[in-house]
Image 1: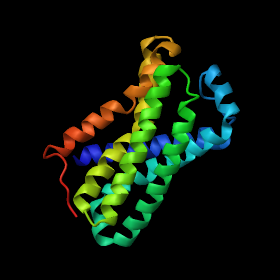
Image 2: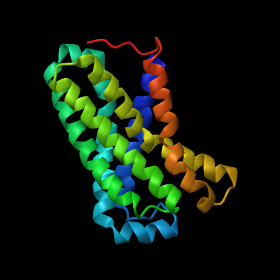
Image 3: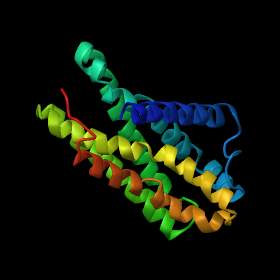
Length: 201
């Protein structure tokens, strides 16, 4: 389990750093399909809001599961949690907006739109649980929520696999709108019902 946590840390930081470089220092849309580039530039505020808020959530998310931080520095844990929660709210709302303009047609629109809604709802459930003092439910909801946050990583992994397969981008990309988060969600629900994940507070 420690190996998996370390891998998640590394991948989250790597993808967040990639996003910061690509969207913070280069021309908008330079690293995406030409058709997507036009769309990004036409909705630059929406895409920048989504990318940078999601990047912050991806960076902060793994720290919410660091036991030593929760126990030894609970104030820091709560502060990072608040920043994570706000980032998820902004990222999900802007993601829902951008889903209407996503490349790939109806399949993409519904895929990314469903992700955005679930990301928002699970974030709200995690926040609501901790406000009520239910730390067990809080852990479960934040675990599921971060699995959806991690879609930023699995999307880019899927892109690599898609390009390596030789399939045309317009063929495989619409399905990534579902495949980037649905396996994550299934895995999170499975892990929460096994002994691989221990809820410790």
